[in-house]
Amino acid sequence: MSGTGAPTLTSDGSGLRVGVVASSWHTEVMDGLVAGARRALAASGVTDVELLTVPGAFELPLGAAHLLRRSDAVVALGVVIRGGTPHFEYVCRAATDGLMRASLDADRPVGFGLLTCDDEQQALDRAGLPGSHEDKGAEAAEAAVALAVALRSTRHGTTS
Image (cartoon, rainbow, N blue to C red):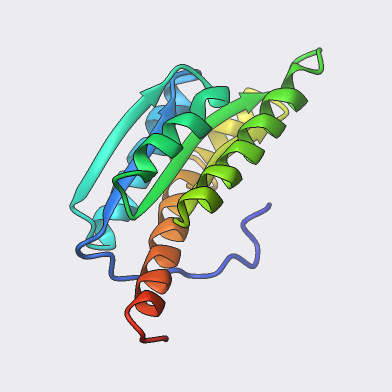
């Protein structure tokens, strides 16, 4: 299980504006990821949340870049399930590289909640649904908030 050794991230995200960009494919998985992100953001004290839905994982980077223009952080959520063609590798690589580029260009964090799974069961196990083993939507939101808080403290001359 990939969750072994994961840090416990608890940050006070009060006052942060956070965008959530979510792909449309695999509705059940996406509903779980978005709900997990929303729960984690609320638990961190983030009340200013904007959701942008995009067609698929390939479109996540542009959606993230758009939200980063007016947000302190973005949570990117999607799922790509391996098929019988190289399409999986192309989409996963493009989305991953694009999200990193959006983050670096904006100098703001992007929480990485793009599931890249071999089958639908793996995605369901990570979606934060009842019976899921992991909640990757919540983890991506927690990471984005933690880094936004850390960056905010360094911008204001304080470090933790």
